[in-house]
Image 1 (tube, rainbow, N blue to C red):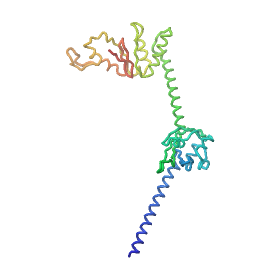
Image 2 (cartoon, rainbow, N blue to C red):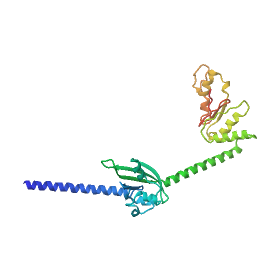
Image 3 (cartoon, helix red, strand yellow):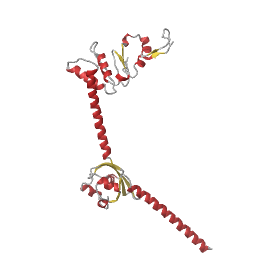
Length: 284
């Protein structure tokens, strides 16, 4: 009975080990498949800075065969111009995780991150590196910047065209022409504008020019008032409006204020102008 019992325990233990071996083989297969099929390049360096594992993406990004990389010191790849830097070597210098931008012989720009692995004595025994090709991303960024510049150029040309089609402003001096140029440029962006000058110099004309050259010309009206001519006790109701019967003498149907009427347009006080995304506000 004892011998049979021991034999059964041994068989159970062997079956358990067999099942565990199958699990480990499947896990190893998944890990290896993930590494081999990763779009990002992966490599592992040993404690001497030699590569002992690289995946197919590493060959593509670095422009070398696996056989040319395995077992070689990373410094040799730098000396031969295959790459101009290494995250792994940086890790060995600092003893911590490092990320660097490297340029490869294959003409790729790569974001490389190295992660150290330590033994029980605190010595680096492995450096795991992930290398992501950012060449195409940088190309897209450059194309985006170029398209933005081109869009700004076309917008400026459109505004130049609108100068002669809509608003007429006669200017001869260099100073006034410079002011008008600034006004047209301001009209293309959301910005705060303060127009100062003595009475009669054309502040209202500059405000109207900015409005007509901006997108607000199509989305809202241009309203001009003289806040100095409105009694102080009526200023709030004129600017913000009121509901019917809000106070003695008020219109029974209520009244819309200047801010509401100028929604998505421009609201101008003859003394102070504030030009933002929707209106020109009066301050004070």
